[in-house]
Amino acid sequence: MSETTLTESMQVLSFTSAAERDSQHKLTPINDTLTTAQETMKAFTFLGTGKGAKWQDVSKPTLMDPTEIIGKVKATTICGSDPQIINGLLPTTCKVADSKPGRGITLGHEGVVEILEVGSEVKNLKKGDLCILPAILNHCGCCHLCNRKVQYTCPKTHYPGVFMDGMLAEFIRVPHADDTLLLAPSNVSLESLVMLSDALPTSYEIGVEGKVQEGDRVAVFGCGPVGLSAILTATIKNPAMLIAIDTNEHRLQIAKKIGATHLLNPTQPDFAQRVIQLTSGQQFSDRKPGVDVAIDCAGKSGSVTVAQQLVTVGGKVAVVACGIPETPVNFFELQKKSITLSSGFLSGHSVEYLTELVANGTLDPSPLVSHKFKLSEIEKAYDVFSHAVENNTIKVLLVNDD
Ligand SMILES: NC(=O)c1ccc[n+]([C@@H]2O[C@H](COP(=O)([O-])OP(=O)(O)OC[C@H]3O[C@@H](n4cnc5c(N)ncnc54)[C@H](O)[C@@H]3O)[C@@H](O)[C@H]2O)c1
Ligand SMILES: [Zn+2]
Ligand SMILES: [Zn+2]
Image (cartoon, rainbow, N blue to C red):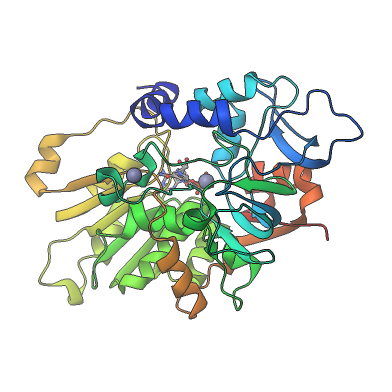
């Protein structure tokens, strides 16, 4: 299946009603004809299919529903999915952006907002509160999909920066604010708070939660922001071994800093042999060689296949990466070793738990921030983020200019 059809089918299955609702009713009014009387702000908007993105004047959001808040974006970041959106990988987002010529849709789904205005039905938040915005805004929490912890498939979920205006702007309108925003602990840095919207919970929910157990031998393929977040959150489970795998030496060194016990380059000729050696040591004499859990955060052709091959009997392969080119899955091999294969998207149910761990010092995601910019420097930041290898970029922190 091609990348586009994969993404398309995902949307057809679960996102269409939310997308239509957001595009029809919930987008900030369009500033096609900005007048001097209209309040404006700057936003980084995706302009539509093949049209790229730019930092431009748009109308400042206003409350459209009593459950909403208007927040000032204090800090935000760029996700690996933003270039994918700009490159047209999400057809529904293209459709939303195409329907607003010159304006498009504001990107961004991570960060921290300071509340400026509160709708009349908002009970638990007040002006001045600093809140984490989860990358998906789920306000249902009680249907069978939410109960299964797949909130991303719940038709009531909103997606900032994907189907409604997002965080790469000076201000944002947040629907169902009481249920969707999380008060930021006062002792946590902006760097760390921003990692709690998407990077940490995505990797934790799809790669670690329910997969990694104490004493496991774990391998993480790919040490970009997502893989590094998987390594960091896997440390919560106290694995016996945490092998970071990447071709990029700089990223491997960050992996070591945040908890990886072994670093491997998959292009080394003896790579597979090294995994077998490491997992067959004296301390594992009661187990078969191979890793107990392989977490694929590389998203490159072959990485899932290699991950499957290196998993031991009864082990697990968790696929966090998306847009993976067609990958052969040899089910007989999986059956012979009783391997469980799983995947998914962020649901956001772990944001509160991970925030507690960051606040109490158990987790420190700040090493994931490699560069800092003012929000107004977003086009420069986007360039640095897009050329990650040349710039040793992991995540860029964008802080409000005030
Ligand atoms: N499931 C979700 O909800 C979700 C959310 C966000 C991102 N993602 C996906 O996660 C993946 C990773 O995102 P990212 O931002 O960290 O990307 P990234 O491109 O920054 O990182 C990928 C890393 O994998 C390494 N790599 C490439 N081939 C490899 C191989 N064969 N073995 C090991 N490492 C290899 C690269 O050197 C790179 O460091 C992407 O596919 C992204 O689309 C999924
Ligand atoms: Zn993201
Ligand atoms: Zn639901």
